[in-house]
Amino acid sequence: MYMASCKKKQKQKKKQTNPTFFFVTSKKERKKRHSTSKPERRGSKKSNSAHVKYLFSLSCLFLFFRLSFFLIIFFPFYFFFTIQLL
Image (tube, rainbow, N blue to C red; front, side, top):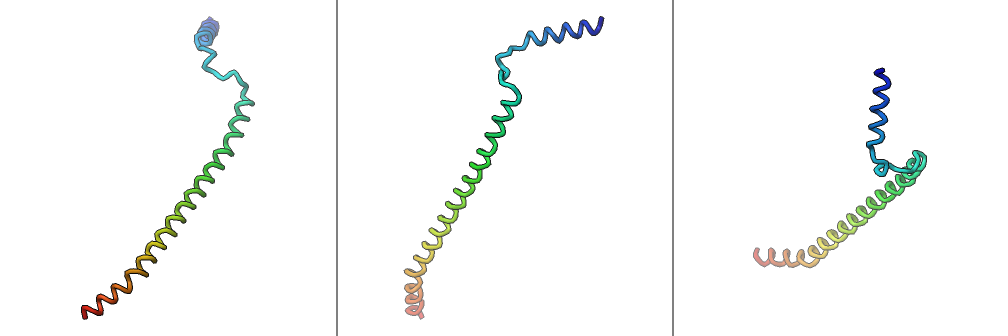
């Protein structure tokens, strides 16, 4: 008696759920989708990290050239004015 009432409740619960919210595709197809999408994500992460490394190296080079430029131009003037002050 108790088992029969449980089964009726389970059937009622199944009827209440709307099947349009669930995927119609099978589990195998979903696994295939996930397996194909994962390497793409990994590859995009690698390209992002390479892109960041490239930008970082460019910014380091820019800073280096800027510092060398200022040293070449202002370093002789600095010595010239210090000698004049002495």
